[in-house]
Image 1 (cartoon, rainbow, N blue to C red):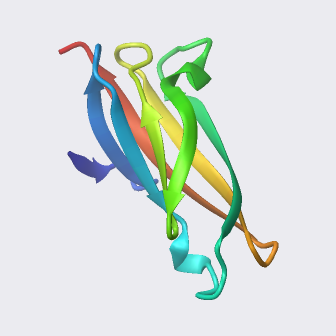
Image 2 (cartoon, rainbow, N blue to C red):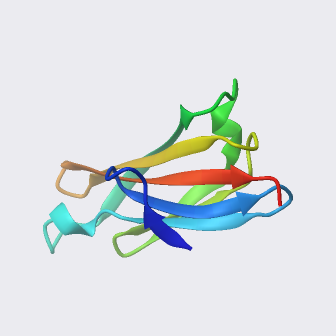
Length: 107
């Protein structure tokens, strides 16, 4: 399910305890059509709720196909909403970001 999180971006999920999912973030809207992804950095922060270790939501390294970045995620703390963001450096040296929000439910 995808919806909007308070007008700030797409809300994916919710993800339930025990699940493992993949989120996709497209950075292509602002990229030059001749550019490719050279590197990327993923971050995860709490926007609602409490979690001392929000980076634990991210599982493994991100991958990409074209301009879409894929990241495996697992649930963090029930009732928490996380902002997952990717910052990409393209082959021209320009930086592009994309984000989504992930909610965690009990069942």
